Length: 390
Image 1 (cartoon, rainbow, N blue to C red):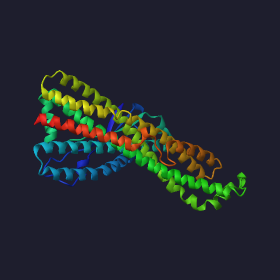
Image 2 (cartoon, one colour):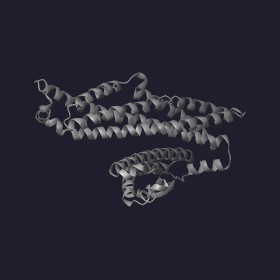
Image 3 (cartoon, rainbow, N blue to C red):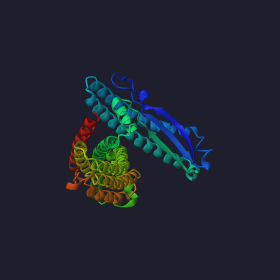
Image 4 (cartoon, rainbow, N blue to C red):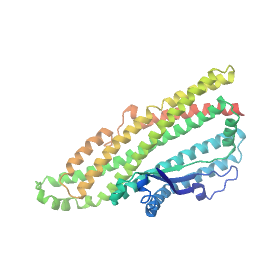
C-alpha cells in the first residue's frame, strides 16, 4: 500500500488566545490516503477527491477549536495563582479534556471522510474496484510543568511511580470517554424520540385518511396528495432528524469500541502496578496500593457500561435505517411504506423510543452514578500519586 499525506495542520494555529501561565499546546492533525498499486494513478492523483476529504475533515476540526480555546483560557487563568501541586492537577485536567476533544474531532472527521468516500464510489463506478483507505490522526503536545514532570519521571526510571502516573491518565481518559458515550447516547435517543413522534403523526394522518374506504392502489397517490399535504412538507425535516440520529449513534458505537480497547490496556497496567506495589515493604506503597485498588475497582465497574451503550447504538442504527426507509417510501408515495412503518414502530417500542423507557441496569443515570464513583476514586488515587512525586 502507498501512503500519501493530503492534509497536515495544527489546530492550535486557529486558536488566537496566547496563554500567559503555560506553553501553548499543539494539536497536529494529519489526514492520509492508503491505496494499492492499481489505484495510485487514479485515487492518488485526484485533487478533487483530496479537496473533498480535506473540506470534510476541516469542518470537524473547526468544531473542536472553540472548545479547546475556551478550556485553554480557563486553565491558564486558574494557573495564575496556582501552587505547584495545584498546577499539576490543572494541567492534567486540561490534557484530559484536550485528548477527549481531539479524539472526538478525529472520530467525527473519520466519519465524514467515510461519507465522502462512499458518496464518491456511488458517483464513480470505477472507484469501487480500487483498494483504498483514508486515515485521520490528531495528536496532542502539551509542554506544561505537569507534562514535563511525567516525562522526567519516566526518564528517571522511577518504576512504580511512573507507571502510576500512566494509570491515572488512562483511568481519567476512560471515565471522561464513558461519560461522553452516555451523554451522546442520550442525545441520540432524544433525537430518536423526535423521529418516532414525527413518523407516528404521519402514520396517524394516513390512517385517518384511509377510513373513508380509499384503498385502491390507483387512487393512493391522489389520496396522499390531498390528505397528507401538510405532513408531506414535514418529511425533509424528519429525514434531517433521522440523519442526525444516525450520526450520533455512529459516534456512540465508534467511541465505545475505542474505549473498550483502552480500558483493557489500562486494567492490565493497573494489575502490573499492583504487583509492583505489593512487593514494596514501605507504608507509602501500601497506601498507594489501597487507593489503586479502589480506583481500579470503580473503573472495572464500567466494564458493563461500555458494551450496553454499544448495543444500544447498534439497535438504534437498525431502527434508524427502518425510519429512513419508511420516509423514503412515503416520499415516493409507495403503498409499501406502512409495512416499513410497522417494523420501525415495533423496534422503537423495544428500544423505549416511544416513551424513553429504560431498565434499571440500562438507565443512563445509573451509569452516570458509576462514572461519578470512578471519578472520585481516581482523583483520590491521583492526589496520593502527586503527593509522592512532590
